Structures are given as C-alpha cells and as structure tokens.
Length: 78
Image 1 (cartoon, rainbow, N blue to C red):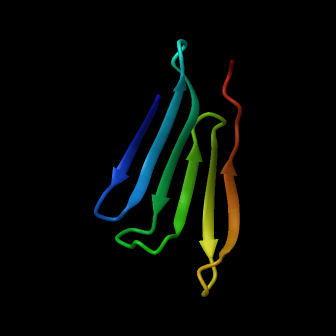
Image 2: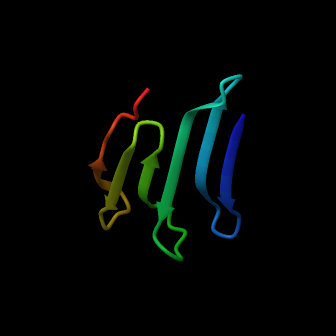
C-alpha cells in the first residue's frame, strides 16, 4: 500500500510511504523538500524515515548535483 503527498501546482512529491502487509510496517518512508516557490527540479533535502537519514543537496550553476551531504543517520530500534 503506497501513500504519497503531492503538490499538483508545483508538480512535486512531498512524501512517499509504502507499508508491508499485514504488519503495517513502513518499508519506504521518504520525505522531500524543495527550494521554496520554485519548480526547478532541485530537491533541497530528503529524509528517510525508515533508517533515520537526512540528506541536503546542492547544485552547480548548470543544475547538476554538486553535493549530497548527510546530516544525521541512525538506525531505529527493532
């Protein structure tokens, strides 16, 4: 089962969650942030709720990915 939030005006996915049946455990839980008010194809940050990782992204003047910098990473308790 997949659940997503989508900004139709900006054509951007905000959050995507997929859960495993029958336990309802999240196997995918990704959040995405973008530069405010812009639809330039640049993801500014992603957050993986399953493994607890947040990554910031920067781009060069030709719109190529320049860096992907993890902010934190932690494995949730089982």
